[in-house]
Image (tube, rainbow, N blue to C red; front, side, top):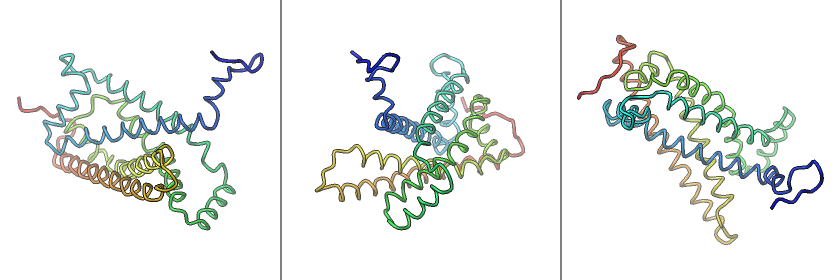
Length: 247
């Protein structure tokens, strides 16, 4: 049962949610959910590496065709809207840790330069990538939100190549996987039951795992993006044509 501190105030139990520690937990959880979404999204996007039919099948799965008998692109829009809200929520929570003005940025640079602490540098990289991601992800999600039916082997490839979206996706690919990888590493360091005796060794292993994950998804995303660009290049004279699988 919640205990009220005084008249007109929030219950003490509710107040605890909005303490710095409570907000930090919400930031970590929202970041974890977004990371899992990004990794799953990357795996599904990479279905193009298995061929156009495989990517078409995955597209129709997310539109509900395999379940309802016909596609409902609105399902994709609904998921995108939820993801965008989660991104905004995570960004608002993370902004409280950003330097608030040029003086604070200058002090942070001096601090990083003086300490030369790798994890502090990683945090700063996460700040930079996080700031850029809010704009890069918003642009990507906005297009998918408004045009959920324009996803497929030809539609996506035409957007990447003829629509010049490959420029956005190159920046997004690097920023999102570096940001996600560092975020998972920092969560693991913060919440893992490490002891003083094994902390240094465990942190070193976690850092190796972080860079392995970042490298894997970056290479997978690069291979997928190059494949979409190749299909888009070959299909440039037929922009607007939609893919029809071999039945």
